[in-house]
Length: 308
Picture: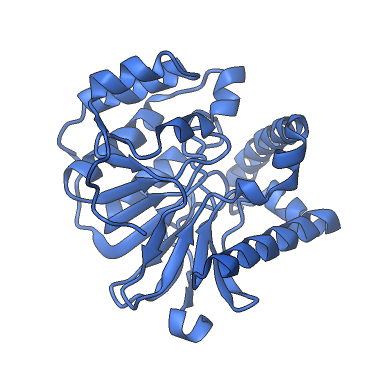
């Protein structure tokens, strides 16, 4: 259950950098630490819409596919009391293979740290692509708490288990080499998708996701998503919670699965989605599309009392 931190050890920017240089992805850690030291007032601050909680996952900072500019637009336009980073925030798998860290990715880190400094409580739940951060459960850096399976209590008293979801992925648990192969194929699909949408934009056509299309059309992919949702729902019910918020599969969804409210906040590689909680306790999936297209997509609303 999320409660104010008491004995959690707090790492300063300098100490965090020193520790992480001895861990994998030392260069990424150094850049994040540098962003902590160079945090400054936001010159583009604008009026924000305020929520009680925001959940985002699968940013995949450190990859060309990360929609960092769209994410920055979203964070600048939306404020919250709680912000949950539900895993795969930094893509350690891709950074080990090929270094990619543009200024916009540093801007995202700076913006998150600025939100924490201004009073937003940020809880970071690492995923499989940023599993190096799982060695820091119970610690903080720059005011961001690293937590293991926290439980968020909504305004109307519902208990939501927050987990990335990779522990329910049989490929990752049983054949990690196959997960790495799939990750490479996914990156290739995203690269092809970027070229495809470049030409679509020149022809005046809207953004279209090739990988999302394939996931919806390939029968085994559809079965994989359904199996994942069922497994997450069963474990949530076993733990005695009303619902779950997860990520991992890059498919935003909010529905009742076997009496459990299943919420997947999507990703910031393709769909650019977030789950938000209003002060009434109502949950909403927000679709924030890529720059150059519609900035605020249609949203799906599910009231917890109706869904439970």
